Length: 119
Image (cartoon, rainbow, N blue to C red; front, side, top):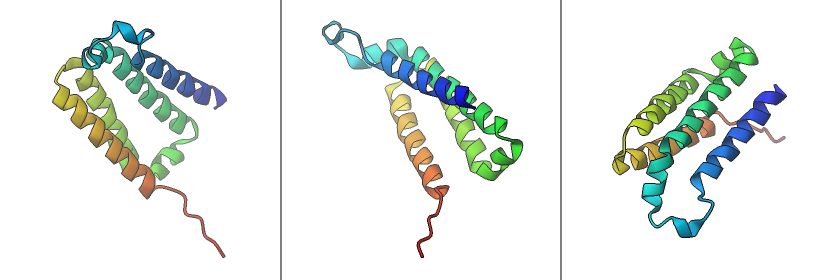
């Protein structure tokens, strides 16, 4: 289980390295820079989704069932959306995908947060 955590963290780090140019002076247009590396970035997103699902499944299928259908739907949306983001250069799609993915992820985790009872 610890290896899932390490691999997840390393993948997030590599995705950040891909997003940030080594020399800012070499990049005049960040949109073009992102588009040139989008397959690496969204490949990382896909890898994170697969690692997350494998981690959840490794904890037992009951764990995946307890996460509910929202978990499967969100991960499926992110997987398909990331695959489409690799293929398209449309900025509108990338922006829309980022907003919807963020909002859906936020709502999912907010609605599934642990409840702490005081008293």
